[in-house]
Image (cartoon, rainbow, N blue to C red; front, top):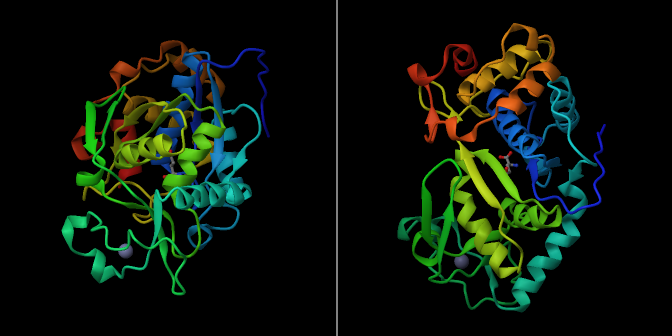
Amino acid sequence: MAQSRSSHFPAHYVGRFAPSPTGPLHFGSLLAALASFLDARANNGQWLVRIEDIDPPRETPGAATAILRCLQAHALMWDGDVLYQSTRTEIYRQACAQLLEQRRAFYCTCSRLDLANNNGVYSGRCRHCLERPRQLCTIRLCTDALDIHFDDAIQASFTVNMARDIGDFVIYRKENLPAYQLAVAIDDAAQNITHIVRGFDLLDSTPRQIFLQHCLHLPTPHYAHIPVIANSQRQKLSKQTFARALNNANAVDNLLAALEFLRQPLPPKPHTKSATNVLDWAIAHWDMALIPRRDELYGDALPPRCRHFAT
Ligand code: GLU
Ligand code: ZN
């Protein structure tokens, strides 16, 4: 299920779409897939797909296959093989062991109650705990008073102080599963990702991932966060808010609605015969500067074609 573009030169642009297989794709995930795809293709870049299946309790059987079929139905064809994070747990475990060894990480046995104080910033209570305790525990990364700065290609630039604003964060969960932050930082580097385009809901995670890149001596890609679509109660479209699965039979209309959300020009009639036609036109006319510099769009701010996805 892959379309390969071989190149003898290291790519100057490698983008990616990294869905978690918790359910079928909905309109909110199509926005992230489409924006990352168009930005990659408009820059003659590669576009990779990575299935983030490291959270079995939240996954639904068959979701990964359904996601890939849905991407194909929308002509969002990726390069190379799909990477499944579930095949890489040993790599995450080793990275975590290395951080423990370097005393950059520690075991944390705090209860929810212990964590409730301090405005959500971890107190440092278990920092001394470098041996695995008997009881269930998480593994946290030690943060220091470092300022992490990044210039988002769509939003403003951000500076976050790791110790003050975020605090020691979890890199291994108590279920003995790698945390999203750790797996993403490792795999973006392993796949040589140079540009990340994703939803604004992940902006909070970006300084954590950049900090992890520093700790693991990995390069930092460029970031762009697109606004998310929310319903009238201002909840982001997601499985939790019962976002409907995309209908593959409406691929052209779904893509037109997504282009309209991203404030891109819409192709005239002869270019809307197939999803491939729409995408070819959209690649040629892609302009990231037109994307609204907003965290979310909902209600009246939604262009007409998008409204029925947000009910
Ligand atoms: N797997 C994450 C999600 O579906 C996205 C990861 C990313 O784009 O960094 O929310
Ligand atoms: Zn603790």
